[in-house]
Every structure is written in C-alpha cells, then in structure tokens.
Length: 420
Ligand code: SF4
Image (cartoon, rainbow, N blue to C red):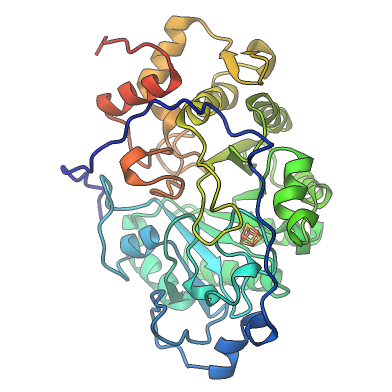
C-alpha cells in the first residue's frame, strides 16, 4: 500500500493571529466532575457484558462490547485505514507509517489528565472505547488479527513502526508485555521496530528492562507538560490524577540507561502555559541526555478538562517547532538562541541563510516522533491531524509543498523568500 496525495483541499484559514502565545494564567483546566457510582470503572459495559465480534467502531448508539487487552487493542482511525480494517480517506495522505496500539479496558484509563479525551472524569459521559483521543476515534480490533495482517504483509507492510501505548490501569504493564511478546513472536524487529509509549506511574525499572529484553527498540515517556508546576496542574493533584513529575523522570532516566543514545525520548505538548524558553530548555536537556523530544501542539480536545481553552497560536507553535528541530538535529543549543521578555524565541542561533534553507526543507514542521525507515529526522509516527484540523495543519503528516512552507514562514513571521 502506498501513500497517495489527494488533489482536493479544504479552504485554508488565515495564518495571522494577534494572540501570540498561550499564557500560564489563561491555560487553567476546569475541575473534573465525579461520576456517580453506576458509571464508575466501566460498570455499564461490564454489567451488559456484550461479547465483542471482531472490529468495533466507536458508536454511541449501540452498547459497547466488553473488550479488554491483551485480546483487544484500539488503534487510531489512520492506523485502521492503513491496516485495511476500516474504510476512510484522509486529507492529502492515505496512510500512516505508525501502527499505534492502545491498550483497552472497560474501566479505561484511571488517570485524569486535563487535556486528554481518554481521562477518567468522562466515565458518565462515554464508555472508554467510544472516547475521542487526539481528535479522532479509535476503533478496537482483536490483537491477533492485527498481528496476522502485518505478519502476512511482511516487508511490504506500509508500517515503519509499531507503538504500544500504555494507559494508567493495574493490568497495563503485564498486558503491554504480552502484546509485545505476541508481536515479536511473529514479526521481526527489523521489519517493524517497536516503540513503547509508557505509563511510568505503574512501572518499575524491571518493566523497562523487560521490554528492552523482549525486543522493544525505543522507549518514550509522555511528560506532556514542560514544567513540574504545569505537570501537577494538568496531570497530578490539580485534576485528581495520580501522576508525579518525579516518577516520570525516574522512568525516563531508567530508559536513558537501558535503551541508550537516540533510543529514548519524551512527549511534550506545546502551549499549555509554559514559555517557549521553558519548553526549549527541556528539549535541550533531553538532547544532552542523548534522547529526543516528540512534540504536540495543544488542541482543545472535545470533552476534556481543557476543551474551553484556545489551541496554541500557530506563531508560537512554529517558533517552537523550528527551534526544537535546530536543537535536535542541527547542533544549535538553547544558549545560542535569544528570547524576549515573555520567553518567546527572538533569534534562532543560526545564520539567516542557513536558517532559511532549513525552513525551506520543511522537515522541521512535520510531525515529530520515533523515526521510520526514511531518515532519522522523519517520524514514522505521523499522527494525521492529531493536533489540528486539516484546514490549518499544525504538524504536517507528509512532505510539505511550497505553499505549505510559504504559510509556515508567514506564521513564523519570517519573510517569504521566493527562491524556489
Ligand atoms: S495517562 Fe495518558 S491516556 Fe490516561 S488520561 Fe493521562 S494522557 Fe490520557
């Protein structure tokens, strides 16, 4: 299966915005409601106990079947289309290179992260397998069926990487290990390498090591928030969620020791109230440790505790995307950059002509994540439209065209140079 670009496009929105960054003061999540007892821990799904029959597409008009990992996993709509288990079309791209397998249980994720569509506070509103996550639906599929399809495709698989996405659940560590074993029993790591998107809260160093021993290639920690204070506000005590910055860093340092250079990383969401200086300092810290940062542009996920807040202004996002790329791949250091009094990038620490070439290459504006089979700086995990609508793309899931680069330049407020 190949990636084919569609010719048609939705109307594009105006890139200019007065609001040039999301401040800490405005990015305050609402307080979570506590669901009544009858909805807690996936009770409706467990009481009805409907037997699943193969693929389940999120559907609020039917009773959700009782599905649980390791027998079942969820995957993004893009992955389900690419795998061929569901139909659909994506704007300007027809496949994703990353097969993200999300663990699933009727009880769902037991954490309450403020920006996340899977969070626990939604129990009364929507069964877990029906919840939107990074802007899309996540169909559920029997794990052995997924593995059989990829194994059968062999070298012709469209996937450059598989990623086991853990959630906060008492079974998550053991079931991730089972899914990993099921996968590596049938699919060689050279054909489709495996990444782990971990849930540090329930993990030990032994789990991190065991996953490496079983063939995991890259281990990532979703810090998501760029500072300890924002972490606590959006993922910890601030929203009655169990995560702590300290535990996340403990597991991140274990991953650094066990997986080594370029084989570990951290997810960071940009625009939750941190300054550009703070997030880029974190990017530098990760590079100095030997790892990478995988970035997401904050988008107000429907149903989340931050769905009333503004998406990250494109100017802020483009500045951070570009600066992060320079730190991760071009040997620029955060100390070479200059920041204004609000912590915004004012200079990128690179000669204008060189910077211009990097902007024109466009890779800096593509989705960042674990690499695929093309180049180290091109992510397999392209997450089509996971952090923006297709009408105003934040992370490009495909190679940028001239018109995309022109728009990115405008959003960066760097003059358009017509030398192509
Ligand atoms: S732990 Fe992950 S899946 Fe669970 S609520 Fe937080 S971000 Fe969402």
